Length: 285
Image 1: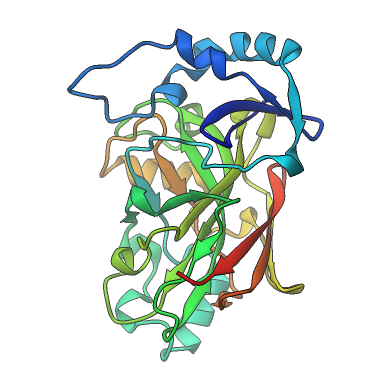
Image 2: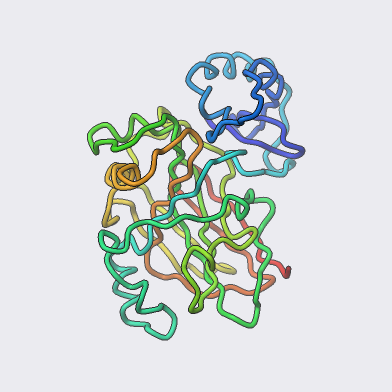
């Protein structure tokens, strides 16, 4: 199933190029009072809601995907965990370009660990990227994104995929400079997710997924997840050895080689196999 939020936070299911409005399903969810949970309520309830959502979609009114504004498919993630330099060829290009990539950050992922991005940086694909600091280099980074569906700490690699709710497309936009990585990557709109969440049962095995990105028609990044240094199960196990992962947490799996600068007016065509191909616009602040 493909699940999305669209327009004014309507809940939808995407089928055959049509968004089915199933917002009424949300009214049957548990209500929360302070202290509010650290997880995303919809993602946490997803296993119990899937049948209801399918039934609602069967009779729901629909609109063409071209006619809606896609928001982030996860409304309230507790945290965004990201993997730095997780493709070997990307590691090679960072080593070869010390002017762009700080030496402090060009080390193996097993040594550097993961990093966090502010949840306030998240937008949907329809929002695009509001470029900050245009006098400095801002780069694109296409990634397969994992959405955690079940809480866990010290998760084993063997059981890691049991904790996945689904997958989506992500752009980890990056301001280059001397500041800490998570600071430069947490600018408003610098985490683009969407256009929808593909549930794990429909998506299948994430070990060999094609991802690509073009800027104004020029292909810059193209790879498959089989080339990840740490696989999806390994990343989940690694992250959960430090953090308790909660439903709705976002895990960005890393970007391949070919990262490059973008400017206001550029149009990115980003693709993640089994999810979608989307166009994302870079605009001035």
